[in-house]
Image (cartoon, rainbow, N blue to C red):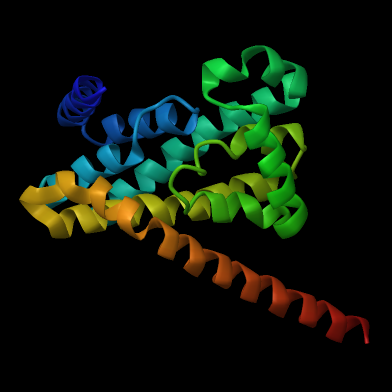
Length: 207
């Protein structure tokens, strides 16, 4: 397993080294299409190139987010076209289980369309949300908007922290996994506050 991860990391580094920003774009398309290519390595190496003066944080984050939208749209479209029958037949090949869809259903019921935004900021969850969003036929404009905003924050943050780590950028995955639960808590509190204020505004308008 460790050998596989090293091979994947080496391929990602070669891709971005040879293609530059296009390499980031291609890598994030693959990652967001539920194929096991860690965004921490893609954007982490991009951040290292920022450290070396070969890229900028903002442009790397923007390109990563655009790649994320492209891959996510592919999965969203598959969700709409194939629905649950496609999941039942091929789900194991794209790393999506029925249990994960059911969990996503509960998230959408609880948080609404904003689930798309929240999930883009959560490691281990962000890759899987687009397919169930398609199955549940989330409004496409909202899907694109929330995906882009969440992915922009995620990709830019990864590139920035890797830039700060400099030569130690490979420790980014370790750092992310250590803080992911705290990050999840912050995101959920932020979304809860957003929904609370929006509901209160609607009530005020109706009165």
